[in-house]
Image (tube, rainbow, N blue to C red; front, top):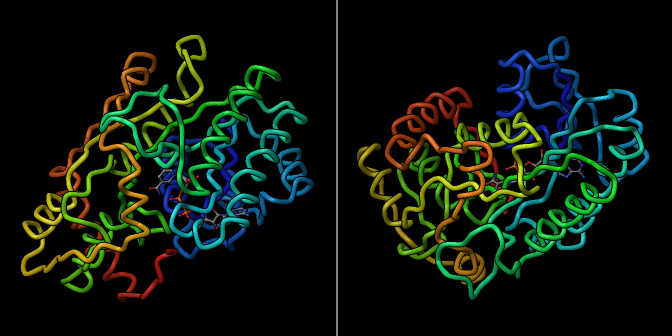
Length: 323
Ligand SMILES: NC(=O)c1ccc[n+]([C@@H]2O[C@H](COP(=O)([O-])OP(=O)(O)OC[C@H]3O[C@@H](n4cnc5c(N)ncnc54)[C@H](O)[C@@H]3O)[C@@H](O)[C@H]2O)c1
């Protein structure tokens, strides 16, 4: 199957490409960024420079590649999005519109979309099901909530097979990419490379989190599910919901002498407090048999050695988080 990925150079994209290629799929990567050093080379992976805000460029690439499906990942995430809401609107809202239009005009059937817990807002119970009122407090959440609705509209009106997961905060062996859930990954990354980290949230902060291998599996399993089994376009997918203090305990148990403390940032704490503690994902479990495999402990056991290897290979390259 030929798959086009937008936003391929990001935290999800690079791991998704590796997973798709390992399954033998033909993959075309695209991003506004140049091919990262750790991406496979051009023989195995064509890398197309694409700004999803440019409708003509999106349509031309889709017409040229003629993918069987598009994984549309390109986006500006929550924390970075708050520092440039105008660009975030154009990339997240305009980018999805351009991809859906290109799919409609070029007869591409499936468009996969990655939504987020940022579509939820304050006032909800701690555990949220799929169909609750969406009252996002960030531009990122606003564009993702309307993206879900735009995709559902294209599904109803034009027959595009639009499918989306609502991801928790994702944790992987990567430097965080500007999400408000980054405190969790920074505990591991800075724990390994610096032996200390000051989290920008309170110790009792609780949001849904997921280890990347589960996140990739969710996206691929949803994409591969028979259409007839699906009862909706957008699915909550859950994994585990530890407090920030519990994550700190897991990190200090796995990495000796690490010091983690807390200095809440009011803006990011308010965003975190507006998100649910736990996602109810009964529909995903029922319709396409979704089951997470990793919890906090098994993720920690897998992640820490990977981060040690990655951060040693990088020679401790400093990368600014996109916050
Ligand atoms: N990482 C998470 O915790 C998380 C959680 C929920 C949902 N998601 C969603 O998953 C998707 C991937 O997230 P990620 O963590 O890989 O983000 P990331 O920030 O690491 O990667 C996003 C990619 O999009 C690219 N991009 C930005 N503007 C673009 C443009 N105009 N044209 C083309 N490409 C552009 C960036 O260059 C980057 O490579 C996003 O849609 C995000 O909203 C991620």
